[in-house]
Image 1 (cartoon, rainbow, N blue to C red):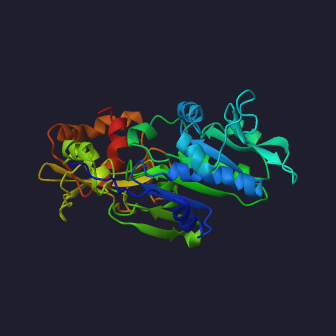
Image 2 (image 1 turned 90 degrees about the horizontal axis):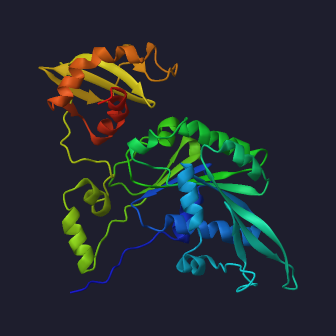
Image 3 (image 1 turned 180 degrees about the vertical axis):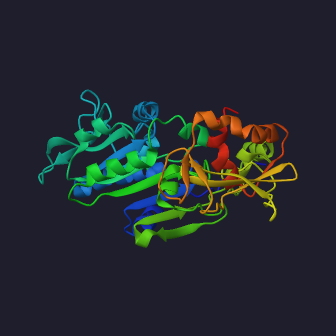
Length: 360
């Protein structure tokens, strides 16, 4: 028997609710396929028509930019949702939107209803493309959308540069003397992300839903759990296929995609400190007890902390260099023997870049 799909989608009211806090940065997290991106594509076009405002649209990698602009407003359903009619000099001369490269234009009308000129309203850039961003230096830019800012940790490692610093550089170069607001759109791909880490925003539990304000109202997080409630026959089979897997928990149980299902294990009170690290700005403590290694994120600031980049945040910071890899042989052997435990999924995810550094 087929069952009607009743899944709710993110809409204008949801976006307005988050933006009503007037934060400089508004982060919106949910499971995938929820309509967040469509809502802000519509906002960009409608805001241009009504107020003449412009939007900068960011993706993490240049490859993503190329893929995004190829189909940005191509969906007929999205065009209808936004009120867009694609201009074509041969088949649709009265169209109100056109695209040239990574730039999208809307058509301006006089009061008598006649078309006057084309005006750009949205440009798509890669986060690292600061030089290209100079072409978007415009006082009418009032919104920056960072789409799909959440990634699995292995994808973050492919980025050359500092994600948080590059993002803030773009914000400052865009705002000049006028107000610019940023919207971060993401799926629950991973527990940690560089922007949250930079601003000291601790991830909320995966089951939490709501809006929370940070940094005296300058940063707002909206998290929505949009798990499937009813499915068609095919959807029920997909549920059964993924049941009990990390991806299944991500889609159907509000879990982060990278939660692995392992059982948390607390560090024994008498465990002996092995080392303390700061990797990607994440503090990590490793201790040993009876041949087993335990990891959490509660470091002792009075003890040494080895950092991939010196932050001048801790009292006794030391730089982590390649020659020190030989000092971690015992930990590598423990990993091979499955003798390493973590207090939660966030800790497990946070230490993965260190394992990459160890070439495990």
